[in-house]
Image: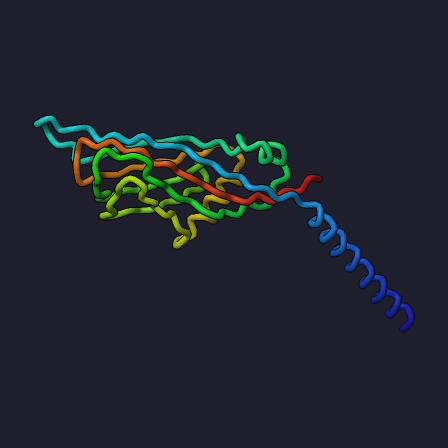
Length: 180
């Protein structure tokens, strides 16, 4: 009976030490913001009396998460990426249009996040909120955990031809890394 009590106390001691080590490690975790932006210059050509282009456009930009100094410093020890916000803002536009059907896609080849816009009017200053309704932010977090460059693509159609606009894509995240 005495041996059983000693065994129980020993196991209790070991479990406290192990859980304490994990909590002690977490005390030393480093947290930092990792925010990224890129501009999309979108041009929908004029028809010029020829066959209509139907307002079709497709643009792609690349974002490299290692351009953030903290991300680069802790790249091998990143534990978690929390996405705080993903958005697009129309910075300039030469005439108001409607996005008839538009898809914004973020991908690194392993994971992807997609948002769809249908009949969305855009003017200068319009903010396109890229929400987490279908778990897209989780996918973006996984993309950033991939620790490599990823693409952001906007593929769509406007209700008018002969329009030029600029969209600022913004991604705000909070990264947790272990310095050890």
